[in-house]
Length: 131
Image (cartoon, rainbow, N blue to C red; front, side, top):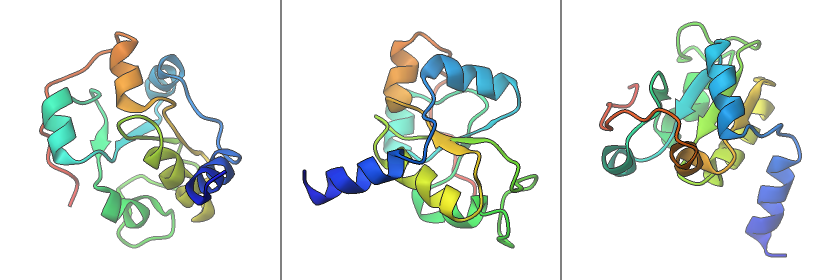
């Protein structure tokens, strides 16, 4: 096993990863869907309607419950599903959020591409990231 494989396995050991259908259900129940994909990917492939776009470099500051720069409404009780292209970097990001005090953080298994392949709604991409 490579070092990155071990890191990914460790991150995923703390996550209750969500399938595309479960992610849609969580969103309907009020979960925050957080798209960390680069602008170019969002523009080319689209976005999940209702998702908030947070660049990966800002993620911890925007979602740590005790951060003065957190998004409005984020608390230790927030359920957040992190989305990347295929579900790798989102696993690492969600585990980081858990370590920062957001136990309801997880990720979308298979990423945005699994969401789209499941036939779930996609809107045209290009939404600016939350500053």
